[in-house]
Figure 1 (cartoon, rainbow, N blue to C red):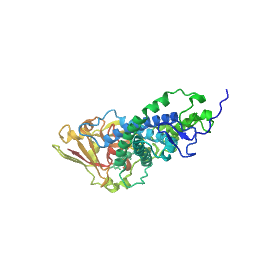
Figure 2: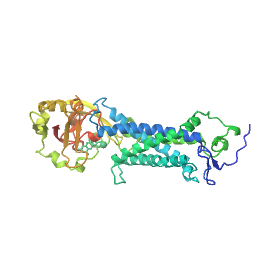
Figure 3: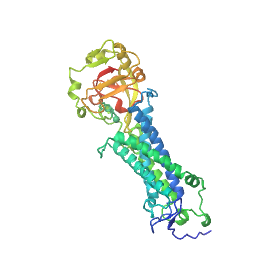
Figure 4: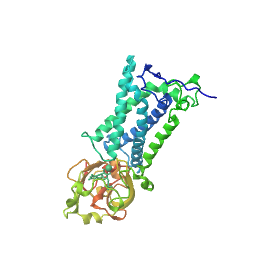
Length: 404
Ligand SMILES: Nc1nc2c(c(=O)[nH]1)N[C@H]1C(S)=C(S)[C@@H](COP(=O)(O)O)O[C@H]1N2
Ligand SMILES: [Mo]
């Protein structure tokens, strides 16, 4: 059977029957089904990214009535890995989706009905939010901060705006998307040609087919994932061409975030005046010299450092259990514990352990990494290492333990 090609269509009639400017909308790829497939993929990726991002936010800004449990030990590592992977993988999908719907933004007249005006306005936070979230996230992973505002605050609040507009968009497009996704994908006869442009690309023969475009987008997402996931999955580290971190490069074969020199702690950490102090709500405040710290029985455990930026490594740590230290000082039970670093300033100089985290058998002030004395850049004389915790809360160069 030979199909007659349809004449180029200049009208866009999906759900907002407005004529487009001449020639603004030529590619037959730009059809409903493709928009629905890309849109739902993006919706799934963004939702996964949102949930894991929310978890990361709660870890760093805990709610008193929702204490973060210390177990499972590797949960944060998994969750943050998924967060960064889903964010990176969404970039090609977002680009394809924007390219696909772009003619809508430049179509004229802007809108006929009030409902369309509202829908158009609603697209602004959706598009701006999607672009902002992926751009700021990727820039953060690359440790590039081309803005003046706080990354964490803006990334967090824009996530709500973006998710809110996704939900609204989904509500507006539900019926269309459903129809487009459930319609069997076959070569359409001219009679039941695609409502957007007459027929699909397979019929129109307009360069890249719909399937070809989807395969390209999927491959781009997969490739981006594969070339960055090596920063956290060690066997894949050779593939990590785009990964900002190599999990095996750094002092003691481990990457470092903010070394001792940058943190301004070299002299303090090496000083004979160093003490580990345990104070606050304790019966016997402690002030331990290095020798006294080393004399306390140690515990060894395998735990990950999982940076919010998505890279991570698992290592064997030995050190004093925080709960043993608290018992030595006669601390009141079930208390929040504040840890302070030698680092004189900056957001990372303190972190807190909730009661459950402080009491965990694997919550240590580590003095050894993989059986060797802890390197200065990894937090010598001692650093916190605890299960299910973002890297940013694994405070290095600890000098004070305060029972609150
Ligand atoms: N005092 C202090 N502790 C810190 C940091 C810091 O800048 N200062 N960086 C944190 C971050 S963001 C991470 S990911 C881990 C990295 O640990 P590492 O450098 O030993 O790999 O240390 C954490 N502990
Ligand atoms: Mo980090």
